[in-house]
Image (cartoon, rainbow, N blue to C red; front, side):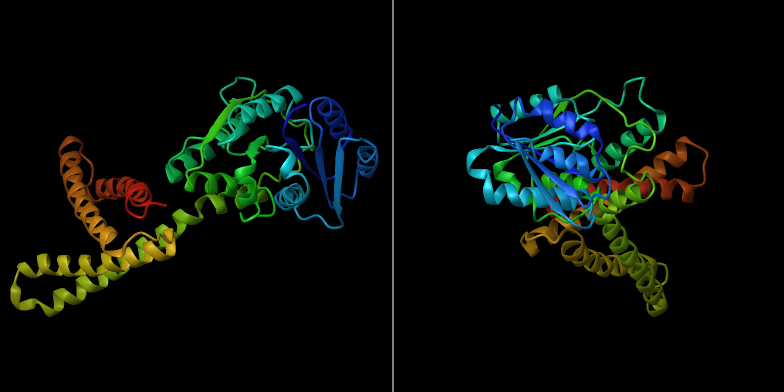
Length: 349
């Protein structure tokens, strides 16, 4: 018998769930099934209750996959954690083969210091083009924003050792967005993640509980929330920069052409100080020492200005394109680069 517990959230299941459980109980002594307020497939839960390996948890209303996972995790923490090394979350629709689930269990038994993800190969030719594009794009955005390459950000097959199980209850999200919240939490807290390749299986039409529009929007809302706050702080400080620059120009009229240099310097220093505080407390909420990171922040600000000027100058000489357009493109690149540098090296989240 494997030393981990299976956790399956289920909503309106069909006979595939019963088939999955019957195949898993040969290798797993305990399987937790959470009935997430199902209105259909109730006979499946009745049959599952007869299985010795199963614990069927139920509540009346549908709350979502994330809520169901946390409900099952709470039960595991209260009743089973002392006898097992961790949990393996599995989807209820037989999207994960028993052999792949066992593969995750074996990996966790070898090393229980890391999260194990069962990831699908989105480079296979048989994969529908929309699924391929969507998953690759989400993986790309995740890597840009959080600095970690994860091939399958939406996989429901995950091995979570005991040392991280309690953290999962503190993570936000009640529906499909909960799983992306988990990944963000693991990456931000530098928890090791190992990816294990699994068989790729797709739902038949109409079988998935995942709403491609609504649930995708919720996932991207979670994925982009930190970068959106970063964008807002950048826009606020840029607006202040322009206002202060304009005021300084009108005040320093007696300085001639030097007023442009001084106005630029004054406006940027004050705007950057505002941006620093907003980023520190509103975006990253870091506890790093104020003075230490302020110095690093201003050094980065100077480097950004110099890099922008140099790149615009070089590119304008190499290609015949309007300098303003080049600057916009360069500054967008520097914006994302700055986000990663501030997150990793200055505010250290």
